[in-house]
Length: 199
Image 1 (tube, one colour):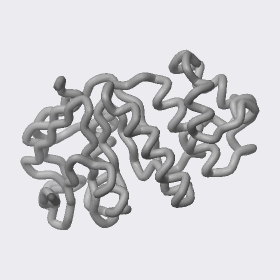
Image 2: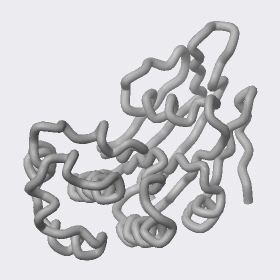
Image 3: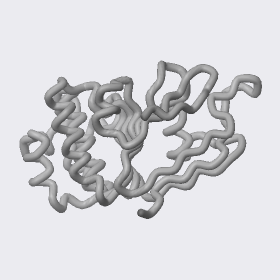
Image 4: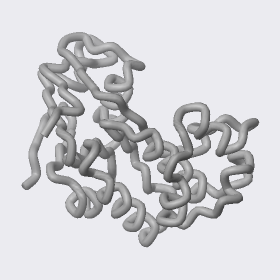
């Protein structure tokens, strides 16, 4: 299996005397799902910002493959004055979108409206649609199903698992049951930051 994310000896904190990450390492391969869990404030979303390059590590290396991401708030992921279709086509082709939309319970008409016309759940599924159409090697999911009801959460995660053979998934979630169901490995972050593997 080829590596899609390699983090080695990462150290980062917002202040010098309080590190969120200290000598933190993580590797992810194609075909794997790893879940990051832990209470608010331990650095789960900060880790994604570091992977995306929005923040710079004090020490250590982060080497991601081509990626796409899905964030907790779908309304922040779409520009309010362009249609969903336009924003998908800005970053990828629409190849194969009909099958994905059917699997996700999305109607064709959702693509040609502005984001505020859709519910949070509908828009989050559009965000996941866009991320999958980008055919990433690394898929970053930050609480991706929090806007969905339990049945839709499971359906969406089943869809992501169905595509796992061609990518690796790093999932942030507060839902330990979801993490245990889908993840090959669960990494629990706590204060002060510690890494604990849950079997």
